[in-house]
Image (cartoon, rainbow, N blue to C red; front, side, top):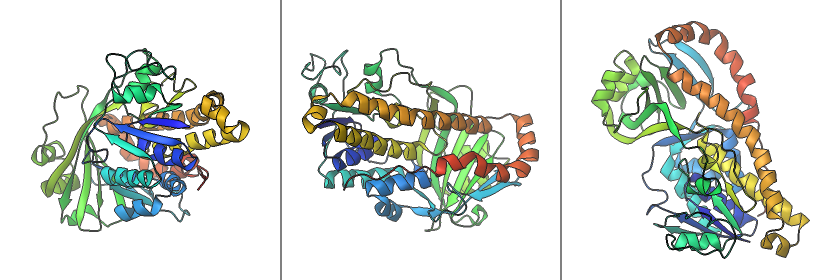
Length: 400
């Protein structure tokens, strides 16, 4: 089976690994010159994402590129501890959440994909002229290019091209578009901040104008992310560490970390996307943020899960159909429908949890007072009940 993957980020590189493991011929096209590159800041992988990495054969490489985090502590803007729970896991789980730079995660996945024989082509963008995804041999047309031609001749097309997915628009011209979520973020690195607390701990402070996350790294630096509530999307995010220190002027620890900042890594607007009604058409399928940008620290983990679920659905179909039948496409519609059915419920449930998480970061002063009074009483007790379904997920094995 000839598979074309659009996008070489987390979802695309993971899909390339999984598809190679079931024997597909895989070419990945990435619009940017470097599919890893210094894009974005740090991210965390909960245990469900780590188990997916284990299935893909990349767990140890990713662990080596990051560091483990044991605990998650929630703080009020006045420094009151609101909750202290295991980070991204059940309390008795031997796995520990891993935090690393997004670029390092993509690099590890890309290296494994190439090792397994996938081809990654950078600097080539899908133009997406109308109808060109439907039907092998349809041709690229005058607006097309090398990627459009490859897509036209592929048995399987995987849209791993993110929030503003071209593949999503080609599957459905009326597909929803992302909208500003009322938050924008800036991330960076500080050094030598004793007030940041102990290592292996993720901290979230709910401030007056947004939320501030930080975690001490083993090398003495402090990785931080400021998420600022603003109903109007800024035309350009120009805030540096000094301006951010003023935004979080009422929160002592965030202000101290921002004052010790060495560099700014990323600035971005956060978006939401309404449910995507059409995620596959029997030959083309969406994975990762192209299908369901979930947030809540689970974007990368859900993309990894998608990649494995897709490959397993295709592999199961190959057991029911001859190799030539699956290659010709007669087994693909059922496989992609099974994949969509498996993933839709889980992604939808997480999207609802992410919306509640986002709302907490944009709460007004009154809601903040209520949270400070109630959260210490209920958060730790409710945490296990509300997250076990997420962390207990087992993605299953892939052929080796």
